[in-house]
Length: 445
Ligand code: ASP
Ligand code: MG
Image 1 (cartoon, protein in one colour):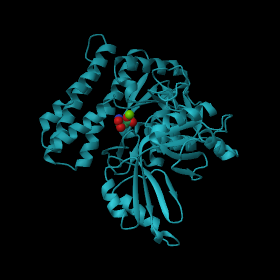
Image 2 (cartoon, protein in one colour; image 1 turned 180 degrees about the vertical axis):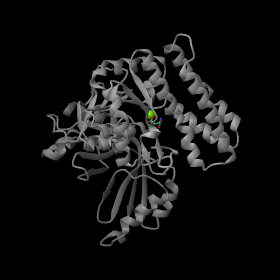
Image 3 (cartoon, protein in one colour; image 1 turned 45 degrees about the vertical axis):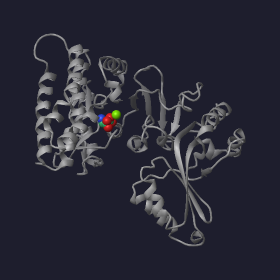
Image 4 (cartoon, helix red, strand yellow; image 1 turned 135 degrees about the horizontal axis):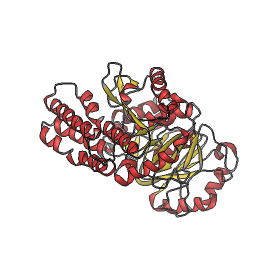
């Protein structure tokens, strides 16, 4: 069971986690927890301030966040006598202070210091949650993830060494589970072979949880967050949107681009590869079943599972007679985007032109200047990408025709289909996006 930052944001959130864990205690859970919400951002901001030399300011900026931990501890861990968490928090403050001074003085490599500092979010949340659960009679035991998850030296985006990690997770956690304890670890943090703290990249707690689930052969990986799974479309656009009960991994991956609320395909891959179903659940509505992501999911009667969209999209068209019958032209175009570190989303090509979409236009002017060496460039802002996803697109005929005839009064600027057999993507004017989504939703759901 992985709990995200908002699921451990405050006293009420911890209360809900206690409920969720105790109601499934018979399933012998392992708990993976993110930092309390906003703490990772605060630690990274403190690092940046210290980097500019202002160590004192960096350190005091963290006070309100330390206090939030204490507020939770005060609420749950009552009774006299010293609280182990207080000692832990004092130690952490001292260590963070020391690390921030090192940042200001550049006395160790910055990327290493950054991971060391940011790791305290999960170090503290996992300590705190373990004590809170224990205060309610759950036999939770905090285990330092840095002793279990072994990574390479890529600070900030470390890759786990899977065999070593699997072995350690099994050796350390299996006996605890067998003894009826609930192992509890911070997500996101790990260590390299030299024992230096590393992190798996932002949002990496899901990844940690999937790695642990795979290592243990869990019956299910539950990702507890603040939405009830993945929806058939954006509920703000269409009030009849509902939670999708089952998605295939491929469908979930296609939807990932359309919102941080959906799982990142990379992070759950270890679980999916081991055939472990991944369930996205809502801590705020713990009795809803949420969305289950499985390796393969059959086509459903509606054929499609979700209509996702993204607004604020710019279309770029590059046309050049040179493209006809020549090789290397695409590569030249893509290199421009690579140089300016700009992600391309939808692509469509004809004999003498390429159309593509961008959602980040910060480098647009420079990109256009470079592309103009290759051909004529047209920039067209104000579009929306609509993405229809479903295993039914693979399996049935006539579906594209049904989709387009539902919206036959709409001008379609770009279409992409076939790269993935479960995705049909098209681009339309932003102003008509909401109506298009509603029409399609009515037709298919
Ligand atoms: N706390 C980390 C972050 O905010 C990891 C996570 O939440 O998954 O990115
Ligand atoms: Mg998070």
